Image 1 (cartoon, rainbow, N blue to C red):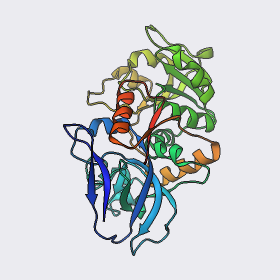
Image 2: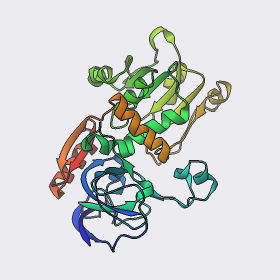
Image 3: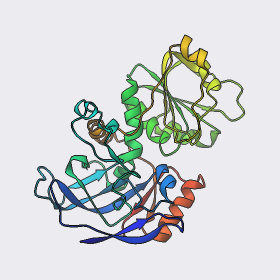
Length: 331
């Protein structure tokens, strides 16, 4: 079988096709309806590969070893496609750190969510809860999984005060998740332009940081967690005074620059910097159920899944005009 795809490359994103043999093992054929567009897609748009890793659609056919999914089921997938299943990371529920993991941009380069169909293992597909429409579910497959995982790994509790730096594709979801977890949510953004939206999404405090010499929270209460979702790493010295001792910092910024931090403050305050990527499969499942139950949904701008539509989506994303997640709709 053959299906339409959109590949990256030095000359731009072009329509192409992928050939697929008959379904083997636990592989599933999905007819894609929507695809989220993530900041990681920008990094790979010049590579010779099918783009997209926030796919949602319906099961069209199943391989002989598929056990649970059936034709017509709504499913989605994210950044990880496979793992060895037997290393210590896989056996303890941390397959995202498997040495043999297959991730977007590093494996299965002829498959992606910028396409009309895709084939993935059942073990790495997620059923979409009834409460979530496909356009809302797509950005959760990576963006939602990433921020939810950060909050879970940090051990956020209902009594905590969570700071969120940046209101974008990740930040606007982090606000909602942290709020629904019961935490006091403190948002930091460059200007006041997104203040009203941040408060509607669930922020309890909002602070503009542009040209700020120091930051203060209401009542000078310290933050137990800080999630950083900006496109570039912040001035850490600006945020240190609002962090409680033993606070956790979760940097989600995609950057190839060295991570530099005031060492002495890290030591004497017992701060923890927690790296992380997308959630492992159980965390991902929990995220979808949590979002469905609590009504957590991304704010999306939709574009047709055509060469022109994809180009416009990338232009808006890279130009800072996206509020807050781009979603491609199959035509």
